[in-house]
Image 1 (tube, rainbow, N blue to C red):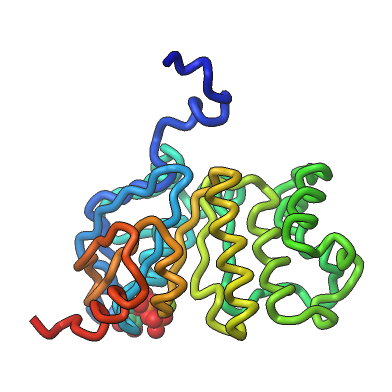
Image 2: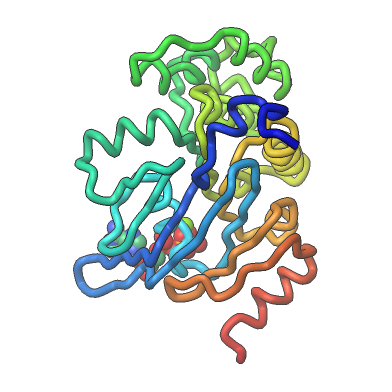
Length: 252
Ligand SMILES: Nc1ncnc2c1ncn2[C@@H]1O[C@H](COP(=O)(O)OP(=O)(O)OP(=O)(O)O)[C@@H](O)[C@H]1O
Ligand SMILES: [Mg+2]
């Protein structure tokens, strides 16, 4: 089949969404938070990262997202090498190609939901795509909440607003660090369903750090980290399989 059958957006993006090659991150004092990590995340895939506290999950996410720079190795976001870029260029690249969702939502209390959602775009000097934002807010069930302040929403609704904010700039990758960590079971399910639907329906790429095996089991692939290294990569594992693997980590 000719590639002409595919939409331009699909064929234009040949480079992986994320490519890490032999990445290391050391902190002053000798903590080696990442030790020789290589990985590739293809567009349209959902990757989960698990591992004990202190194993380097957040550090991996921060380096892969251009929030932090590694001490060694190469990081490419959507084909663009970020190691070696100065802070300003790295920030620009991040604003253009990366979206974030955090455990604590990080919405600004004094702004309406709508202003929260469009804030990163406005900071980047870009005009919001109103049709895209309407599609997203309808999809997450927040279309009638746009004028509300975050405090007037439930935790699950706030996190869905944070997901919309992360997607507003049509990023190559959305990084989510324990996005369901503060949510009750039902809201957590809704947020996971949403992330999964974004991958399935829109071809969005998602990288999610989580301690919850049931959440990680929604991903296509799960990396397990220990002591700054990726010690396992599992394809579509089940939640019980993951729980078992985490418990036996370090026992062999
Ligand atoms: N800014 C920093 N300065 C010094 N050490 C740090 C810094 N940030 C992280 N570390 C250390 O790097 C290691 C990895 O930390 P990281 O936050 O990536 O772990 P994590 O897997 O995300 O843990 P958790 O599950 O608790 O969030 C830890 O030993 C941590 O103490
Ligand atoms: Mg962490």
